[in-house]
Image (cartoon, rainbow, N blue to C red; front, side, top):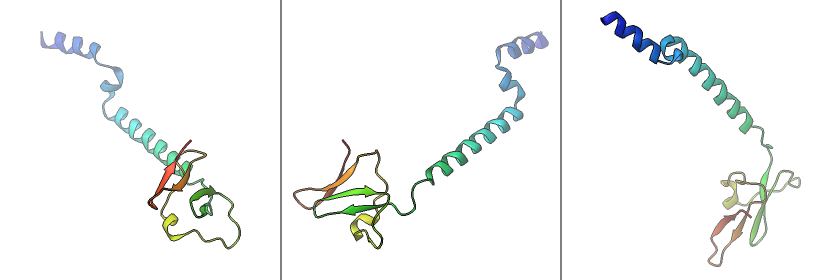
Length: 100
């Protein structure tokens, strides 16, 4: 009776679960390759792109003029979330990102 129950349960289990360790290894390898690809894709941003700032607005410039130095408050800002986003200074002097 035990043998019949095991055979019945094996038919109900997905084949990848029956393989056990092999499926786990394949999943780990696939996710590692995916993570490496995403890491490399993120590093394709221009190396010298900076926020170019005026008195009330900062825009993302991938090709700034030679010798341009970004203001200290804009150095820690990352790349814009979406194309067309910019930073704007509010009434109280605080900066906020605006994405149209």
